[in-house]
Length: 264
Length: 256
Image 1: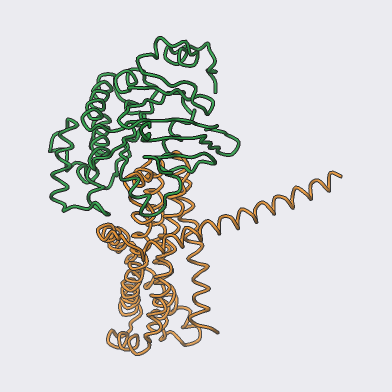
Image 2 (image 1 turned 45 degrees about the horizontal axis):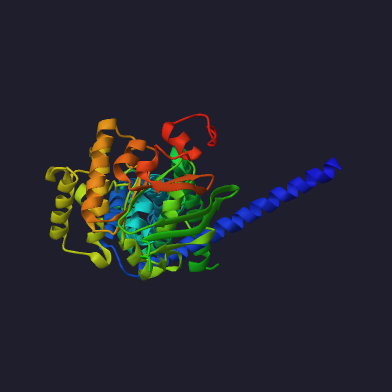
């Protein structure tokens, strides 16, 4: 009998987890649909959108730029060292270019922005929830989803591809600097090889991914902050959850998007 | 025929899990009256106000504003209903990212009641002056203000768009006695001057005596007593007697 009870307890805990997962997925989906619907329905708040574009986009440039620069440089060294094992050290420009534009630019940029933006959005909205600022918006005849969530979703979806493109350029430049300064590549040849090799699809696929990542980053920050628990602990948990869930969703959706954009 | 009440609650119930906060609230607030709702912490005073504003949806019961069912209003109709309200939140609930004047004129900077920014700023400064703040505070941010100043800015925001109903949620909490008295006087002046219907949640009896025409006492999820503010010291209602005199002994358990 104790074994039966233990098995029942085990099954119940699995059931509870599955139910929680479905409930959380449903709640997030409804939140996302509501957020998107408010992006397309007036009134719009252009000043708030511009403020978020600055916060999410412009102020993320240094972190994305630094990440891309060092990643591009390290990638060049790794490709050269690995490629040299089978006399393919000369493919550094091509692999750096394709690696940065298709994968590393959007994914690493997305993860860095997730850490920076998801956390700050969740903390801001969580604090607004705790201090009744979100309730105050409602009493001032302003829909919080429209004023707080929609501009952030739109701003992140617009800003992230721009950040990824800047990251691509800086990452390729990082590879170029290491290639020409450390690995004795000819500068003109490096640039020409990169230019000849890259196709438009390599760049656009990365930008599409970045737009999706931007949406995920803002969505998770807004969702966790908007539904934050009470007190400092609630806001802290919302912030952590926002970064963790945004990062996991970025990596998972990256695989799905890669399958969709580059089917084997 | 009797006049339509400004606010009417009929049998409003609200539970959070197994916690039955409101167990059938019946309340009538005539137009132009200043009503104070008193009761211990956690007795559902704020939930009551949030139900009227639609921030919390009651499990059952009806709420009427100007004789119209407030709970069935959606979209534009709900926005128009909310335009009638102004609210001073307990902690001010000022928007950190906006300057003082933008907080005060928030309602006039967007939506259907939008007016030019310069006009909104002038109006905000006028309201700031009304609550005793200088024009120089207009460009400060909420974090740069003291608690008393934040309450005043919250009050200026609540009255800026000329509401017909104003809710005051614990207006004197966190203030020193002198500042609390100043805020009480200010609230009373504004309520009389604007002729609004006012609902004040408080457990500060000096606020009740200064602000309220009538008092409603909530306990155990229902209204236990209503009557004129002048009668709170003379009534034989045991709840009011215990609460007003701050007694540990009585029908209200000290540990809830």
